[in-house]
Image (cartoon, rainbow, N blue to C red; front, side, top):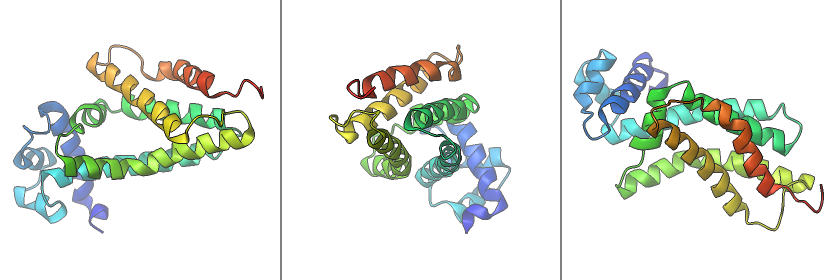
Amino acid sequence: MKKHRPKYKQIIEAAVEVIAENGYHASQVSKIAQSAGVADGTIYLYFKNKEDILISLFKEYMGQFIEKIEKSIDQKQNASDKLFTLIEMHFDQLADNHHLATVTQLELRQSKIDLRIEINNVLKPYLQVIDSIVQEGIEEGTFREDISRYVIRQMVFGTLDETVTTWVMKERRYNLVAQAAEVHQLITDGLFDNNKT
């Protein structure tokens, strides 16, 4: 597979840096190639075009991220702890790589409908992880079952997404990961079934 070839990762990492620093539209394939230390033509051995690079880098990082999260939450005993782990890891992943944070929070917001569809497709497995935590909380009897699971998922992901976007827009002047506990508290306050706790 292409993604297992050595230069694939090299190009992906270069693309994150170039797109974060220049913006998606100003990031020519030649700039990405130069940053990766490869010839322009080499890019096309791995990617169809610049859009494919953007989708591929998101897919690559999201795939690694989901794998790490699933391993970590498997070790937790209840839905609330799993949700906290997901929140903390979400923040930590992006706080640890500010170029990636800029790309995911700003440059992935593209107006082209086909690009948005592709990005949403990459995001689906992550949303399914959130769904599984919510479902577990309902089955435990700790999370409310009178709210649509779709609404809960949107609330959880939307809160995390907006928190990171604000951090990026504020030029990362504060500790993002330190906000995990408060975000978790706010979300679970709305999710806990007070009739059963």
